[in-house]
Length: 203
Length: 203
DNA sequence: GTGCCGGGATGACAATCGTCATGAGCAGGT
DNA sequence: ACCTGCTCATGACGATTGTCATCCCGGCAC
Image (cartoon, rainbow over all chains, first blue to last red; front, side):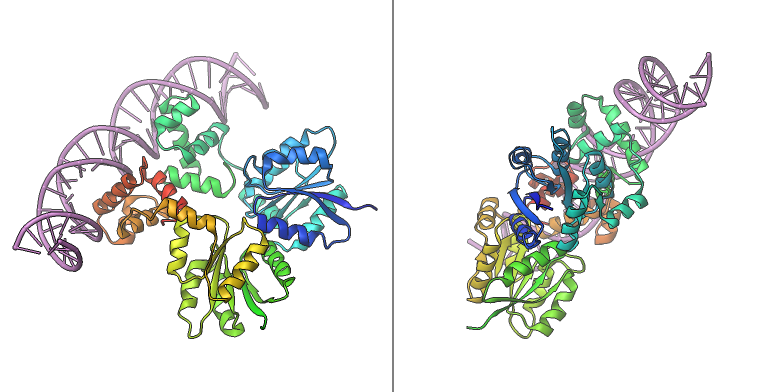
């Protein structure tokens, strides 16, 4: 059995180089490439043809979940594993929809990452059990598509006026969506609703 | 010259173990202890007597800056280095006030961490130049103490009523402070003001 | 002493926000 | 054919928010 070829996409240089060093200690693993930017991943995958791509979620250029979707549409197969800090339950659903094979928390020892790599290469899925349980507990988002969109847009921009322009909706409609989102999330106001939805990965 | 004894406090297990492995490759460095919780640091320092303590800012139990302040009041001297993800300019000021000797970004290679450790042991300061420059560019917070307190409290709690109770201030006064903070930060509302201040480390 | 600034408070006002009722159009399911 | 649920909109209402003027008090600088 030959070596497993790995590409690592992670924006924290210190973490990235450390993981490379440690994975390289494993006999059967070899890191063939690395990058700190999401938008460089596809090109590197085409050039290097790794067996597995390790993706951070928060990256400059393009986020890890988008990269995973991108890689799903290649002419040749690539396994992807999300390596992330927080177990936002909603991330799991999004990750599975993006076609990833594994999800590992940075909270865990390196050994669990190596293990996950071997599992997905063997064709299995490797989902961190904590995240899986949390996702089951939380259930899925009670928000409709538009409610989510509006709430997500409200995260950055300030007033309802600006939101309605950006979403090409009437100001009243924006208010209605925000109001129903606030109620569904048992929040007292917009800011709290955003916090809650964000913490569960529903945005 | 003897070895430099290091204690590492960092909540991401994967990162923590990786850094330990890599620092141990350096001849003159030895990691004598590790923890993922801020409130365990002081006890470990008393027991292990490290030369340098590496502190993450975001940790369960107690944040890194508070730990640094704690360590400053010990009967014996300990050097502290903050190891953090983001170069919030305000962090530098807070870190220096907390008596830390160094500040390194996780964005940099491990070598820069080793270098910083040696510098602070030699009695020098080791401040990442990016952070130093950013802090100079941003300047210091335009907020008064109370404005900062009120804005900071507004981050979690929702309505002005709750804030006024928690701060034992009249509701009107709370509104006034929030209003002046919003204007000083060129924000359009409370939420935006919190975002701005938070992103610069002024909270 | 006379300003000036920050902390604390009050009252008034306009703008925004959150809620609710209501309606129309359009999909999907029975 | 009917009901349900989502989208989009309008209008009205009360509560909250953000702004402003104005006041008192205590330091601190000049």
